Length: 188
Image 1: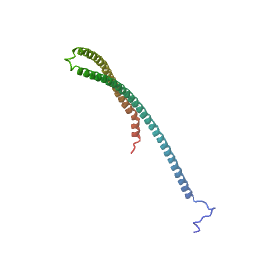
Image 2: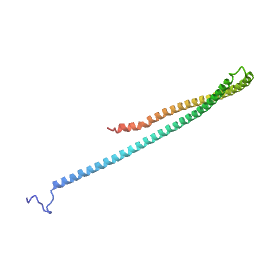
Image 3: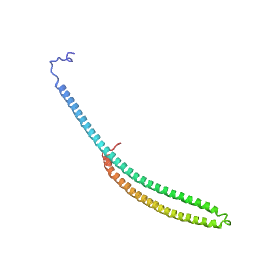
Image 4: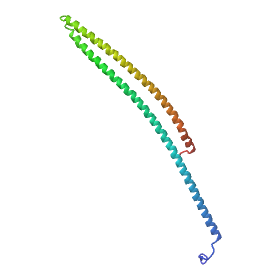
């Protein structure tokens, strides 16, 4: 029992000192390894944040491009809507002219008694037919405008298709670094 308790003046065993120094060296090496690992993790996180930022910017560019194309399409559709409203107005005028013609034809039933009045009414009918021909001519112009609008819309859709194909190629090109990173750092 006297050997187990040491006095403070007794020298420390050299094996114990070596063991303590080895233990201390092991602890310091573990701390260094942990610091290196934490630095590597920080760098990997920063690199991932940069990649995510690039992906976010590319998605923003894609969305802005798509929204500009949607604005073009809505403008063409609004133009077509105006042309259809014009055609509807012309059809209403034709319908009014037709109803006037029906009324005037109904006046022709007592034809036997009113031959002289019929000549006047026929003149009115001729004027209505001339007005109708003018209306039909105007409607032909509007139909031509509608046809042009449809052709413009087809051209715009073709352009939009080209834009979408270019965007798909750009997305493939922009996705290449992400695929390379995925190959480098596979995620389970």
